[in-house]
Image (cartoon, rainbow, N blue to C red; front, side, top):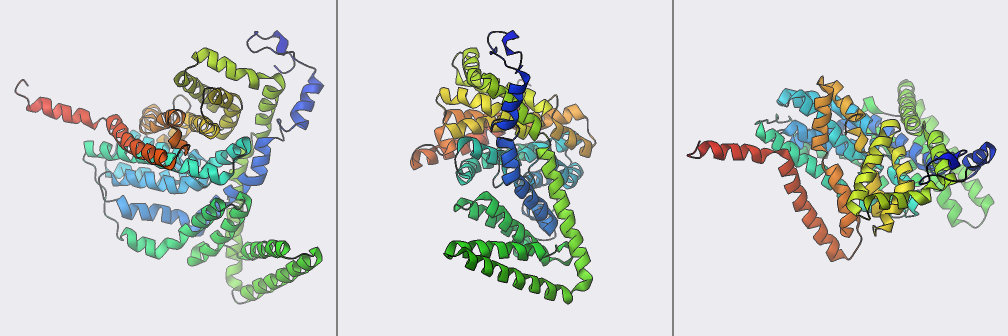
Length: 503
């Protein structure tokens, strides 16, 4: 297409060029292979995926299950509600809806089946809850970092905009599973410990998430925050003997961070360098002394460190494996000028209607998501679709949020829906019934983009009073929306018809 663009239909044709010129554009310009996706992967994604892996290995994953289990596990639909809360906690740092489904689903899906949920329902609830993790700060499945790069808006602002919509997504799934359980009289079992007891005992596992979020919201760079979060994860791992990770990295990071502060505070580079060297020597002595008295544990802790690092690296590669290919696609789109004309094409097809434009973008995201990872689908779609949305009056961040939310639909929307199929495998249920069940519980995924498009307050655009009003109305509307889609009102109608004299 890049070379022979003049042979294509007029609506998408361009002048074309020689193959060497096309390759020069793809490999030497910032729009191609070494463009936004590669920069975000190298700068942010690797660090945050490593953070997620270390947080999981330090023992936090057990807390993400135990606390929701104690809080809501004994209530109506308890196991399903545990799935929703656990997926929100773990999904916010996992970076992948499929990984979230597999990791939390391995525990929650059998628990839901045991409580009385049908296999395809249990297998559908977990992936529906898991994709919500892609919308929840601080990591947002790497999409938030790409959004910050594309818009030039600080990531802290992206996080603030994303929080309420993400909570509303989980709230809608929570309400739907509540009424699904109520229809079938499904109640969970009470945990041995109360939620408050578990929180008092295991509150330290929240520290890495709290620290990383506070530092980013107060203006520190995501990279700095991620490194500090990694060091916190390793420190927290020492709460339990079986989860301990080698402290070397923590000491090194503390030395580097202290060195950076000293470098900013001092006028002379030589002075700051000498202080950094001294701090490094002190840190090394501390490590030697610490290990001398604990020699038998060093091997185990080093092994845990290597396992955590390997897990994070493997997860990073899963996200970054398609970086080159995506760069080629975006490079060709930019080279051909289709990026500029696509907005006009979409607006013309939609007749200037924002509703139809969003529906066309949803279709494009679904098709793209069948062949590439959802984060890549977001990037490709954003490059060509955001101009169409902004042309129709949607603010830039809201336009990106519309595209990002819709880019997740291929995870749970048939025919591909890999996350739903992963849930079906764990639940040992029919794949298609599970897929449509997941599609049902994730319906807010399709409502959210319209709220971004038509309600400025949903993306924190407007006065404080307008935003508060929007939040309250959306909260009430989300409850009504989830109640209606749960279908419990059909049971009420059946009960009324049975009691009526005509029956």
